[in-house]
Amino acid sequence: MIMRIKYRYILFLLAVFQGAFAQDFTMKNQNKVMGTINPSFYGFGDSSKAGIIYSTEGYNEGSKIENRFGFANHYFENSEFSLALDVNSTKITQLGFSTTQANLHYIYKAQLSYEWTFNPSISVGYGNSRLDYSSLVFEDQINVLTGYIAGVSRDPVNIDNKINYLDIGAGAVVHNNRNMFFGFNLKHINSPETSFNSNASNKKDMFMSFQSGYEKDLNPYGQSTFLPENSYLYLFNSFSKQGAKTRFDLYQEAILGNISFGINEHFNKYDGFSVSQMGTSLSIFIEEIEVGANYSFDIGSKKVGGTTYNTFELYVTFDFNPFKKNRRGNNSRFYDMQ
Image (tube, rainbow, N blue to C red):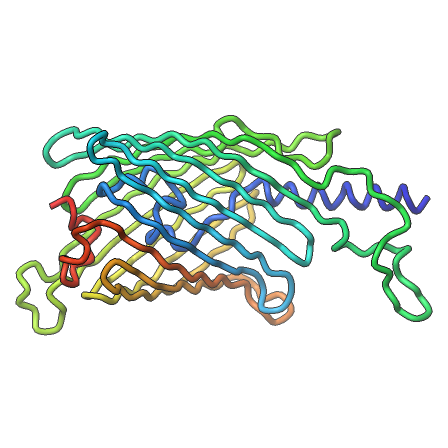
């Protein structure tokens, strides 16, 4: 009887887990590492870069979602294409859930005209998800007299605790060499199977996203009394849809010499339930290196247990472009194209 109840409990947890984790986790620093939302951006500006992002999100008290993302890309000038590798890992320690996926991206460069460039891409990924049942506590582990919790349950769990899958994606970016770009991306084109339960299917819904960006020179002639010589306003927008979930991200960033600060807004809707967040960001440029952080919090939603849901991200990126050292504080995203 206890075994039957436990089995049903595990199946219930799997349904909850897989309903949530069939959806992609989306970074808040999309405007800084645009390859997280569309790998075609790894070829943007013929750049060679590397970087890492660490984020934690959840309520102030309780279970936290930890996410780690690392990437490296290189532009092959003689062949006019880029290769990129990124690894994304998500973990919820208290629930025993973790997932990791590594992706290889090929980005081609096609010159449409003197001003406009087209960067199509294809992606192949390999993913692994795990569910650690030892993190769960069952009735037979608890001594009702002493409160002692045994480390191992007497009844075995006969459900797979790990899965592996292949993932395929494609996308494109078109941009000019002065101040504007547009992007489109598809992930999970092959709808990979991510179910822990062999008796039930849980395929990933295809993730579709659109991006646009615009940069304006705030001090084109370097004559402003209040602004540094290299000052820019950067706007980045992203719309994404995956199954019943839609998301809209807006970024407004001011780049003033070697300092950048901005605000961002995030709107999520899932089966009639909506969540909105607002964030702030700050970063500094030290020649080829940018170090920054982003903090976002819920707006217009009720607190749970007196706490709010928030996200904190830290990131570091390295630009290996040989001309980066000669920019003299010019951190325009279009600098190397002009």
